[in-house]
Length: 374
Ligand code: JFQ
Image (cartoon, rainbow, N blue to C red; front, side, top):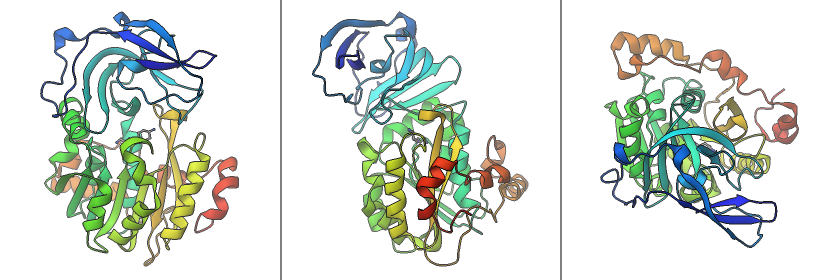
């Protein structure tokens, strides 16, 4: 079933699609056989419509096909209460995987124009065409802002894309990652080899578990940088947007260490962003900054990042001191895995530009950011 707004309230619509039982044990048995793949346009929409009470809130959809648009058959539409009244759509060529982990629905489909798409609980996490923008920015904005990062922790990021980017930095000796959902890792390895290549780096240590619990056990001051590559603050990632989590991050960073978290859209989530900035101002006594990037397949076409540093050697995020060009050159010389793939989005000019905020965002955030923008 899925939920649709029909002008009078949310209605529950049931699809008749070939049933495929999802299991909880990773990939085994969950990959839909090639012969069973159904061209999305053949999937019948709205076999029946059942009126539902008008509560104005769409519950999270429960399967991939739940997001098939009944207005445009064969299109995936990203519907969520986090961006009410709009839904970005992609034309589906084929569903490649549908599974249900202990934490979320996991779906992969081949789109007509953005390559393969990874969807968790009905929300697009990455597409082959534009993942570079998000993964490169969330990684290099923090890592190019400090000299000689050595120990890095990634929370979330089970697709491996952030690891791929972290591994370009040759100064780094240890890359820990804590991802809650093993199915995301398995699916990425199966369907997104250019992204999951990040796991191939020998410096990477994968922990499957809860990021908050992982941080609790980390000795104080362990990391130079922590990157929080989470999904939206509903479902398994909710705790990653709350004060105790930020406090645990600050504790795990060395003095002058940096954190970069995905921080939603300036166009859609200003109240949430202000809350995050407020919490960060209390927690991080170095600097607190907001940057953003264009990202065609995320809601509103952009995504933001919180960049903060702990008390200690000052960090000027807006002026990178550890340029990636230098890293690439050295990585190339040393034949590290990262040298295989060139950067597609990030460069030093884009880095500095990412901290320029449109006027409405300045009006909302400027007084809370440190150092001040102007
Ligand atoms: C992919 N490595 C992480 N991050 C995905 N609404 C989020 C996906 C959902 C978006 C916000 C970013």
